[in-house]
Image 1 (cartoon, rainbow over the protein chains, first blue to last red):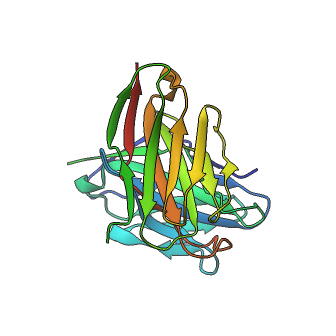
Image 2 (tube, each protein chain N blue to C red; image 1 turned 90 degrees about the vertical axis):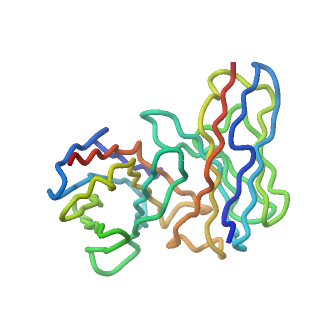
Image 3 (cartoon, chains in turn cyan, orange; image 1 turned 45 degrees about the vertical axis):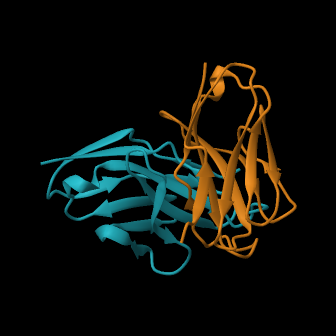
Length: 115
Length: 116
C-alpha cells in the first residue's frame, strides 16, 4: 500500500531564512510525488510534482523539492521564506503499480514564518 | 473557469439525518475523489472514481456512499450522520486518462460539516 509521512506537525522559521518541509513515502512501484499548499479556509493548491528525470523540481512561488530515491524522501524547500508562506503544506504520492488513480496524502505540516 | 465546485459550503446536521454533498467539475477530468480533512490527520481518501461508471473505496469509506452521476458530477452521501463525521470534506478531480498518474489533482473549496 502507498503511504506518506510528514514527520513535523509544525515548522517555525524567520522571514528570510531557508525553509524545509520534510516528506517520506512508501510505494511498491515508482512514486509520483506532489506538494500542495492550503491557506486558511481554502482548498488545496498545487505547488510542484516529481514524475521522472531531474531530482530537483522547481514549482510555484519560489518553491523547489528534491527527490531522493535511496532515502525515499521528497523534501520541500524555499531558499528565503516570506511571511506570506505561512500555511499548511501537504505531500502526496501515487504508486505506479496501484490500481485506479489513487492519491494518498500525508498528515500535513503547518509552516509559520515570523517577521 | 469554475474548476471544481462543491455545495454546500457549510452544513449543520443532527445525528441520524442524511445529506448529499455535491461536486461538479468542468475540466473534462476522468478521475474524481472525496477526502475528509481532520486536525492532525491530513486528508484521508473516502472514495474515488477513476472514470465514469466506476467507484472504489478509499481509506475511510464506512458511513458513506458515492454516486458518479456522469463525467462531471460525483456526489457523497451520508445516510445517517454521526458526530464522528464532523469534518471538512474536499472533492478533487484529475485529468483525462485513467492512467494519467503523473497529473496533479484539482481541489474544490471544501464543505465544512458539523454533526451535533
